[in-house]
Image 1 (cartoon, helix red, strand yellow):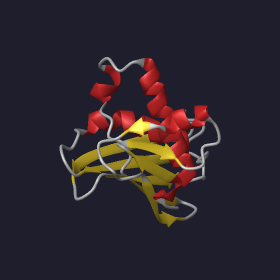
Image 2: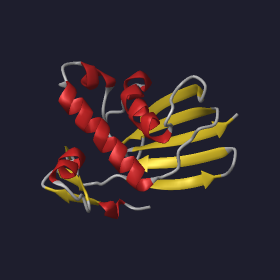
Image 3: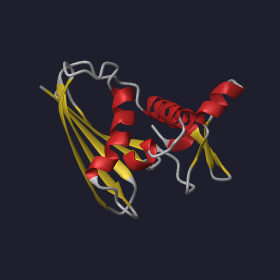
Length: 156
């Protein structure tokens, strides 16, 4: 899976091959650099899956709820969904525990402020995000060499 599914033009990312104007508008989101989202599947077994999502837009929980209009939040949510689904098709339906390890090049968010991004990722990877499926999660955040989140899914 690669970032070739995206087009970057003048500070805006678009999903390549969007068929309609509505789909193009759903996938358009302003970003602060020219990097496009990508994924590395580090490990995939029956009990453990380790994914690394790189360069997803950085969204703080404070930003998410401090006056961001619901239309903008919906647009961001739909963009995350289209990006992640275009890069990774598998859905998780068995009980599991999930770790989200965030790294940021600049200005690392504290772990609780990463929860908005956790929820956006979780909604795509887990069609049913109830307590029956996700038994627990862990979030860490630190400064790193690139913007990425490592998602570790352990089936129980």
